[in-house]
Image 1 (cartoon, rainbow, N blue to C red):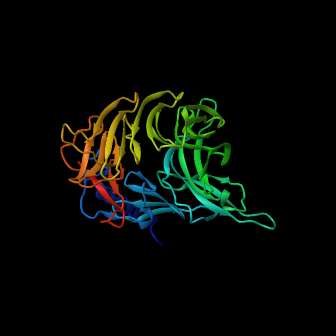
Image 2: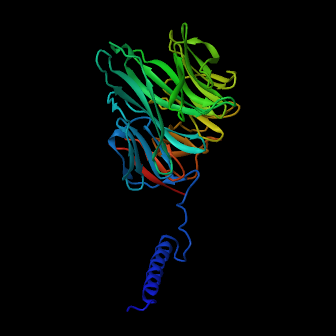
Length: 418
């Protein structure tokens, strides 16, 4: 008969062996003394980026702006067929989430956004899909909203915005994008999605309850560009053209319009409670840049500008507006709370030219001149001590992503350095 102590001893030996292996793996993953591995280095903001060819990214991201958002070392890209997550250190695909319906390849995707919903951090993108017809009922375009968790990139929520069937090109979806999310004390969080349809790219914005997966409201003729303070702010179509305006997140009803009707209006987020609007006159093409309080539409600052203007909020306290038009590059910094002008380039008296700005993040404007890549202090406009090495279009504390150009046919990722 086998002694009774043989089995317990054998089991104990196996348990001891497993514990030893696990401890060894933990030590190997840490710093050699059993402690967890330190987090990867983060530079907020990066002083420069690793030069060279970088890590190549998919050719489908060859756009301006790049249709992607950074989440740590990961690049979450909106491709025509869904959300793709890439590790910028290796270029490998970490996750892929596709729409449930057949996607429409004729609509270029726009960058997804990171939002907070019920205590979770989500990456949300919008995609054109084709809903098939049946019997005598026509098929139609729709927008499928996909939300994935930023931790593991599993599908977390979603919704479908059905568009009216159309026998002609007048109702065909041209573009769709997620603007942001917010709420007021009386409502649940609302995700704002904007679409453009038809040859005239007629805008419509929608308020979507992601938790319930349904559309709460629809604002025709309104192209939302920012969400803040219980409002969505953007370009509102009115009699005679467009005006900068806002609708309430609670019900999509108009809250205010600012200025007079003009040919067209383009808007960008310019601070926690400020939006920048570029109005172009239909008559003479004159361009006027305004910084406006989102709460009620009060104009903080207004000035005439040239063509090709884009404004970028650094996520903290400064907005940089710039134009990269060949031969007449221009850049200026504004306080994101008051609209006060902080600096402007070119400065003939100081012998300084304006850079073509690629990205603005946490107090630094990254751009380029004929002298190569340059980084400016976003508050003062002065050159930082060293060149960033590359001119990124997307930046966070870990990586910079550079768009494709004539010399580099594919976008690339470059790790941040001190």
